Structure formats: structure tokens, C-alpha cells
Figure (tube, each protein chain N blue to C red):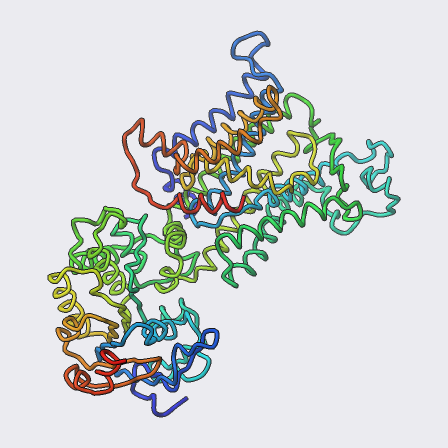
Length: 381
Length: 250
């Protein structure tokens, strides 16, 4: 039942996106490993890893779109779920180092030896097993989101107030993870990874595999998100976004619907973070920075909120711009990003995808909503 | 709970609610029989909308009993639970889901399971499709089924909202100013539609438009400052000196 449910879920555009991602998963690693250097089709390891990182950002953007674009929940703290997934992966990678660390302790990671800890804290238990760690990657952000959502949706916290407490959530985690005695490496975070699933993490083959995993996971995330938004549940989510109290008076328990999509979205963000960490080689508290979460919202706005495809485009385009800009004019980047957000909010309420629909195909969708939520985003940011 | 409530569909007894010291509803009592249609009139601020909020679970009364079907205590339930008991509500300002098609608006309101998982795996059955088609015909929007609700005219939105109410198959309909913003012809048609609905369901209509209330030809309750001022036929309450004073005096 689930399989047909997922396959039915894609429209034509969705099939194109999934096909493209699968093609990327095969061709880019091939261009890196098989095509000789010097060929026009060769992909350098630097480019491969950079693109792999963009794909994990795209998955984060997709998760933001699911809650913001379809249910009107403007999360300014999704970076927290991304970072928690990243930390879960980082803990696994730390345990994989084993006795190859500087202090050569077979069990304790270096930073714990440095802090004079004698044994592994309880929450680090089990992270030497890949299956357990990979489960935690989605489970930890999912459970946190469930608790947070259960409390706030039940109390009917909505709009800007909810956005503000999501900011507070990620900021609180930022401060907590900075502390050495939290047991997550404090300021420095987790780094110096050696292996993943027994393969050396720096090896070209492993990097190519991580890229493919990111592309395929993004494709899977896209299929799941499409299935959700095209189901009746997705229609209820849009109804909640447009007229929440009306939806209640029709008999839908709004908080249950919000909680479902919010938890799913957080788990998705966690998976994105877990794929991000082995590719960049480090996870530290700066990933909890509220600004990072706001950036994710900007990717979605730029690409086109409530379109699923848009966030992927937005995440890749904005980050490509960031990579280029911070290389050429590093001090201007934040102003450029802010200006981009203002321009998109004012002139492109449905982002790049909306622009594409109006200009190229002439199909202008008479959607009325994004302006209002865009303004909210502006205020809260 | 109370023997007096037995046999009634909706029973409000000695209900009061205050907002920041302002008594919006003041010892209000009202009984509605099954199958009855009732018009509620009253000047602005009389508490009409607050009364609807109390019945539908949006506002909790400070004191008093609100019973549905003679025994179900509505003050302990939330909006969704009350809606699923069979109380439907139409807002004063037409509220439809603007970025959904007309057909999807009806489909969302259609009586059925309301759980999130049920919705995730829901497939529209032939019976449901038939019901949707029939409702679209009733509200005369069959040819606009694929249109986004945002594109409907004001009057059409009112009708779509009434269609959504009917799709819920409620036992009691609360209708807040259905004729607001309608043309005379639309108003007359709305009166006919409501009378048609009242043959099978109980209806409470809040309305300002006296011609419309006269067209309905039902028992009228006049609210004033949060409590019932008069009750009876429209002619009887219109002749009531207290009602005349409230509407014309001061």
C-alpha cells in the first residue's frame, strides 16, 4: 500500500525532479572517479563535496517548505533539527575513531580524555553501532520536535509567536552545546573523523558514495513530501494554513495535523544534517546559530514557497551564490542575502518557481497567500 | 444532568461570560427543539456572535449549562469535537479555503473520519464523489468545481460555505448573517435554501436583515446586552415596546 501511495504521489514535474536527482547520483560520482582529470566532464573532489553539501541543504529547505509552505508554520529554528541529526552522526563518527585518536583511548573521544572524564556518558552509549546512530539521526530531532510541537500547538501558539520560540529553541541549544560539560565537545564540536561504515572518510570513493547518498536521500525526501502534500492530509494542511479556525469548525483537530507534519519535517532535517557532517568533516555549535535557520527560510522563499521544487532550487542557487560571493566579496554577502530576501518578498511572492510559471509557461497561479507570511518572516527576521 | 434539557437539541441555561470585566453574555437562556429553525436578532454588541462562540467551543462560559441533545455538555469539548457531534457553523464573513478548488472545499468538509492518518491514506470513494456532485448541484456551483475558491464572487463564497456546512451533515446549523453582502435575488434564494435545510436539520440564523427574517417566517429571539429581551413571532417581538426602545430609543 505504501509503495503505490508513494509512486502515485508524483506529478509530471515531480517525476522529472526525481529522475534528475537519480541521474545526478550516478553521473557526478562517475565524472569524479571515472572521467580522467583534464577532461571537460571531470568533476573535482572539491566540486563533488561542495555539491553534496548543497544537496543536504536542499533537503533541509524541503523540510522547511513542508511546514512553512504547506501548513503556514514559519520555523526559524529548523537548523536545530539539522544540527541534532548532524551531532548524532558526528557521535557515530567519533566512536569510529577508536584508539586512533591523539590520546589513543579505545573508547573515549579525545575531548573527553582532555576533560579528564573516566567513562563514556550514558547518552554516548550505542553510538558505536551504525544502525543505532542512523536511527537516532531521525529519532532525536523527531522526538524533540514532537514534544515542542505537542506543547506549543496544544496551547495554540501560532504565527510570529511560534516563530520566536523556534528561534529561542535553537538559541538555547546553541548555548547548551557550547558548554564543555554537556559532553558534545563544546566550542570545538566533533571532528577529526576517520571512517564511516569502515570506509576511510577522506577517500574519493567514500566521498562519491556520500554524494550519491545525499542525492538519493533528497529524492526519497521529495517523494515522501509529495505524497504527503498531495494526500487529503496535505489538503487539510493547506486549509489550516489559509483558515485555521474554519478547519477546526469543520471538525479537524488542527494540532494533530500540525504535529504530524512538524515531526516529519524535523526528522527530515535531521537526516539532512547527518549527511552534511561526514561531507564537511565537522559539526560544532555554530550550526545551531539562529541566523543559519533564517538562511534556510530564505532559500525556501527565493526558490518558491509551497512548491517543493522551489526550495531545492533556492537552496542550491543561494548557496552557490554564497560560495562565490564569500570568495570574491566576503564582507558584502550578508547584505546581498538580506537584499535578496527583500526583493523576493516584494516582487516574487512565489519565488523562482512562481516566476518560471508566469514567464515561461504563462500559467500564472492565482495564489493569494505568500505575501502575508513573507511579511511575517521579514518582521521576525 | 438537567431534566429540563430532555428532548431539546440545544439547551443554554443561565450562561454568562465576561471579557475583561465586560459581560458579553449575561444569564442567557435559550432552548431549541429538534427540527426547529430560529432567527436571532439584536443590535450590535448584543452578544450574538459570542453566543455562537460558546456553542461551538471557541469560548468557554464562566457559568451556566450548555447542553446538546439534552445531555452532552458542550462546555467541556473543543471545536473539533463539537463539530463532529454534528454542529456546523457558518461565519459572518464567508470563510472558504481560498487556495483549494471549489470541489476540494466540499470534499474537505464532507462527513467522514477526521484523523490525520486516515487523511494521509484516504482515497475518495464513488459514494463520496456522488455526494460531492449532489452538493455542488444544490449550491449551483457544478460548473465552477475546478475553480479556486478565491476566484468566486462574494455571494458564491457564501453559497460554497453553506455547501460545506451541508457536507458535514450536521444536526444543528449555526448561520451568522448569511445574507450579508448579497443582492436581493441572492437573499431570496438563500432564504429558500435555508427553509429547505430546516426540513431535516435544526438551524439557528443570526441576521440583521428584517426582510430576510420575515421571509424565513420562524420564531424570533431578540438579544440585548447579552440576554434574551423577547421571544416570539417577528410581528409579536416587533410590537414589543422593550424591543422598539432598544432598536430605536436612547
